[in-house]
Length: 402
Image (cartoon, rainbow, N blue to C red; front, side, top):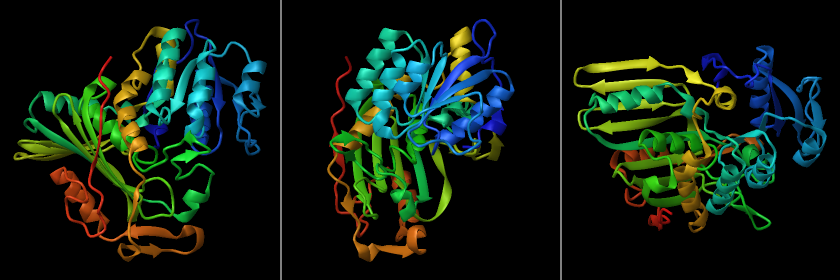
């Protein structure tokens, strides 16, 4: 995400002013991003990285010599005391057991996105967090963007008129090597354990989560309906090209049109549709463009670091930016995808392959225009009459609020 350069500083030590004692579980993949961020925070004397855990040892020099390396969280907890925070940046299917183990300590928890792989696991984790009294931050880094407050203000002030809907558009490229990098990549389940590694639940999950936040949908009580239409061009279990159509209890329609099968990767964006204008938010860049009859303005905003925010919450009660319960709406979307029928394969006649070997990647013909049209009309691929789209939208029954 490139957040370090745009991070707003915050007090990150413990209540006594001492550096917070932090452990990182998972040092590869996105865990490497956390290592870099923790190095920055340690240089500022905000934290002390005391231990890391990963069954695959870290590369030489990747972890500070002061941090003890363990093969797993159980061994780390047995050998480490007085932790202030534990970061879990591991495969999706491990989030629930590792998160629960972390909450059995006195440490606060930073859990990478998606929080867990099922609504049932989300409920168990929320109950454990409530019982422990520990804070849980979910790694939707885009929610730290200061642009979200600007969007809230322009909607409240009527700058683009009355909110009509939100479209999330994401078109990335993922090659064959991406799906071969790990045993769980592109899987719905492994040995009966939920994984749900699809386009909307992992690589472009920030598009969904950020759209929900802008619409004011945080908890499980904030969604009225979710529809899914899932496809795949790659030889995988999960979806790589999908439309997710959501309606909040306030009546705001959100349509997420996403693919990993584009001709080229483009920074994903959210289009906030108003009666008298639009706002387009490129969330990976914190860049907001507002267009009305009076003209177009563009501004790039700063961003708060979620780890600093978690530590500030621990030291002085600063509200969390991405608390666990505020991922409830996102988890309903994930559950709709998890319980939907298997993604429909896109016929080979509508897919071309570019590149060679592990670098070869699928391109769904005409997908760029299809994504734009789906978001603009809040329509599914089948409703647009695309030649490869034959699956009607599947409605998910939103559980009644407790």
